Length: 111
Image (cartoon, rainbow, N blue to C red; front, side, top):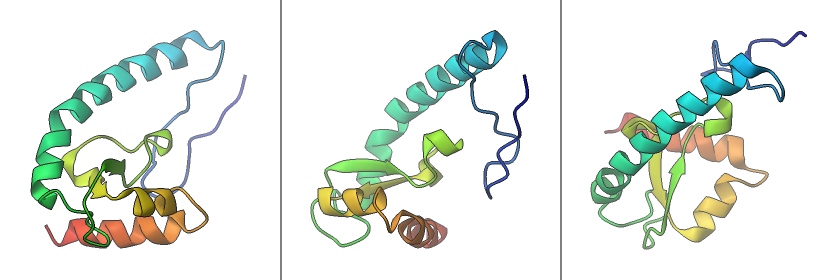
């Protein structure tokens, strides 16, 4: 069985879990459980940091978004979370996702 390391920027060394590949699945499950706990811990601080407002447009925030998607090995660390309104969150997952992600990274750099 062969697979490659994800070589996108910010994903160095991230190996996706492969269906039926015991070690990869166990490692992924452990990483996901750990990250889920980190997400629960950081949701409120992220919301408070944003003052309850979308950090992209200023509307009331209703969702917390991972700047680097967890599926791309992003974590739930506070520096990877951004509060968004529904509209901006939909844009962040749409055709403009790459541009939105770069914009969100710039916002986080200002912290």
